[in-house]
Length: 234
Ligand SMILES: [Zn+2]
Image 1 (cartoon, rainbow, N blue to C red):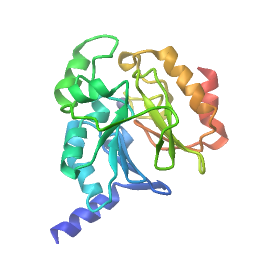
Image 2: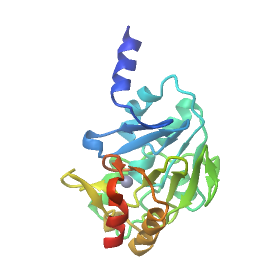
Image 3: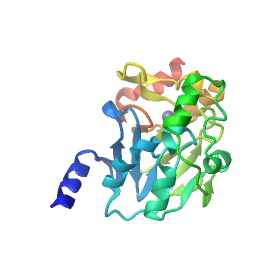
Image 4: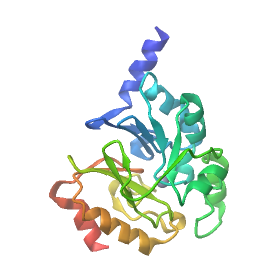
C-alpha cells in the first residue's frame, strides 16, 4: 500500500516529453530539472533533491548518470544516486576533476556569499567518474555536443530524429529571481566565460532543435524558432 502511494506520487512529478525522455522537476515552477533520457539520468539537482529523484527512478532500468556540468545544482545528488542504484557516473573530461573532488564552484568568476551558500547547502560529495564524454560521442541515440562557457566542460545532448536537445545551462528558460518563464543567458556570477557560452548557444541554435530541455525553467517547444531568435538577438 505504502509502495503504491509512493509510485502514484512519483508519476505525478515525472513528465513524458518525447520518446524515452522524461522531465523530473525538482523544485517549484521547474526551477531545477533532472531528466531521464533513454535510461540515463541527466543532472541530479541539489543534495536535498535525492529523495524526489529516487522515487521517480524506482523500478526503472538505469544505464548511468550523466551531468551536463559539475555545478552544485546539477551534481548535488550525484554521489547518492550512483551509489544507491549502482550506476556509473559520467561527465566531460574537463569537468571530471571537479566532479570527483566535489569542488564544484572552483570555476566561478568570484567567490562570495552565494558561492559559499551553494557549497554548504547544495553541493554533493565528489564521486569517482567511470567514463568521460567528448564531442560526437553518443549517449543512447543522443549525440554529445561540447558547449563550453557556463563551465569549461559543459556538454549538451541532441537527438537528430526528433530534435530533442538537453541544453543544460547554456541558457535558462526562466528568470532565476522571479521564476517567470523566458529565455535568458545564465548568470555571469556562475558562468566561467560568457562569450564562449554565447558561441556554444550559436552552435546549438544551428542544430534547429525542436524540443529544448533546460536545467532551469520549463521545456521549450520551439515554435516559430523562438530559441534561434533569442540567440540572434544576444
Ligand atoms: Zn544550473
